[in-house]
Image (cartoon, rainbow, N blue to C red; front, side, top):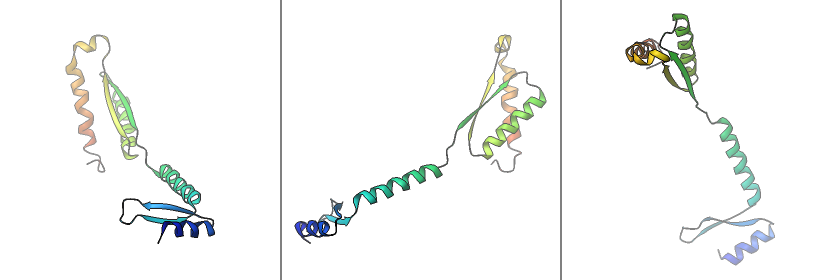
Length: 123
């Protein structure tokens, strides 16, 4: 169809002539209400953003001399964060003279991954 004729048809229908495929041979145009189409596209994008799953990096800090109950509480937090689909960053903090004994931290750093292997959903 000729471009002038397509423009005339679009004006008669009070619509827009939109170039859909400019790289095609011949170029492809469509008669539509462009503002309505653009509005619908924006609403679809907004809805997709609402439904998109957001993952956060949750941070858990362990001390070298952590009590068993505190350790289990933090493990529960880690488990909950992972089940919710978040990523977890585990930090072992040293204070004062603890910095001189990094081997104490190695025991803590290897304990929780061993525990997490027993979780049935964590593989």
